[in-house]
Image (tube, rainbow, N blue to C red; front, side, top):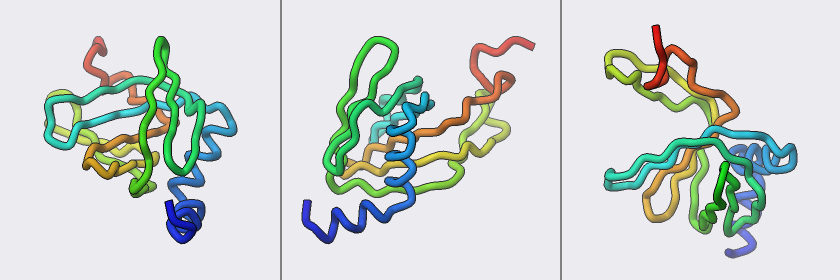
Length: 121
């Protein structure tokens, strides 16, 4: 990573929020989506290690390393649809657009219980 790219990343609000969450040991909700579909994974994690080139996420029973070189960061709410696809809602967080076009989203917010797939009336 070049010095200019590193400086740009360090000043990015999304990167700064990830650093703060990592320092705080925050428990985060995440959504990972492959660029061509076929896989969407959700769960909870902590950012165990964070460098400009990579992040290590700890989930309930495993660790996941994500290469970050070339990643762009977006802060703010992301729209998600309800299970019946008739409505949507915003969740505040940080979206990472990875260089391979995959998408990773982190948030301190949880999905409201009435919107979860396994919710009961």
